[in-house]
Image 1: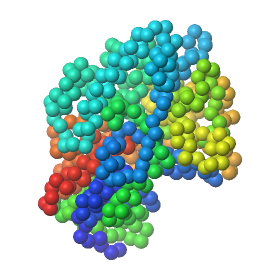
Image 2: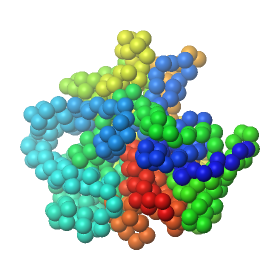
Image 3: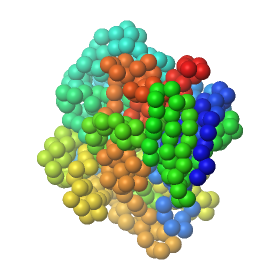
Image 4: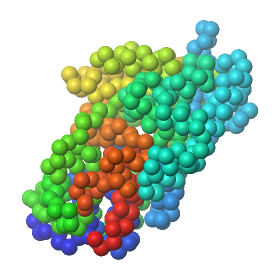
Length: 519
């Protein structure tokens, strides 16, 4: 294999963060080589056609956008758009023997009436407004800092300038604030879910990992809104890859990095292809992979193993199912986040059962329909026939539960998860599922172990490791991407301020390189 000599930067991994770094550095005049193990770029932020013979291009793994700064879109002139969702969420429940639910969205009047209809007064709605007014103020102050050098803890605290908000989000388990502010179990559960996406924790976990997860879910874009990527998530990574190539970056797919050697000023990356091994020399190496993979490549001691805790299910339906709660249109209920078995006590019970080594008897999950907001991911014939997608994200299913038999446990969990959904439907979900050209139902499920196998996410953790508060801590460096090797940077989700589809670690790693000039 020929050696790739004379690169300013070699980037290991062609996920969206690595591509962001490549685009910034190439636009700044650096020679950039991206080595991607798979046959295509994108990592977890891709669109695929998972069902044989069906023209439905789904966001297979990651699926919504909140943490991507508009600054990155503008800086890189990306041809990429998102669309907002008019409905934030719908949560079905049975009370007093009748099906009902909480619809959040569609205007202040409708939301206030929905709260009053569920809870019997305006108290919970007013508490909701106060609580999210507070998080909105925090978001406005914190989100812009994600693409700046890391502030200190005290600098961020001063910037937020709200001691109550600081206590709620940064110092006490978020469960304290949920219980202080809200009385209704269902409302409490809806609030708490943002603290548990991909994070296996209880509301009162003393580690505050749930607080960190909650913070990143409410600061996106300075508003906390979660938007739909037009064209699917692959549209974003395709746009970033196009920007990187247009600026001169070379993207080599089918190239698996197997070793990094560095003296702190120059580095060599050994890679493997179908034809053999080769070496790429560079002054800087950026690793768009997990901290575990970084340690493997450099020969360093790996960090504590990570563990994912989610079930991801993709479905294609001939039509949306009718709901037992006839007061809400399924097109509204599924356009936002449809919460299933996510009452506050249900979440606590599910966590306790999973922590004891058992599958939750009522697995919590949340669902949304991409195609209601953006039908472009479906072929025109499917659109005309009324087909719709459903994306389900299950909570409190840590990787350890699947180790005895991944296939069997996946099937068992999928069955019980869908049963929780069907308890709120007026017809069987199976009657609504589309079939592929082989006559199989259009549904696929991915466990943490599947994600580890397919994408090399450690333990299937979608954040690569526990999220960190977005301020400087011992050993984090100026940008939160530094490693113990001066010219090797971590530009993946495991960087400080990583996690989610944001491009932030890629931006910050590029800024760290550019700040160093020709050193």
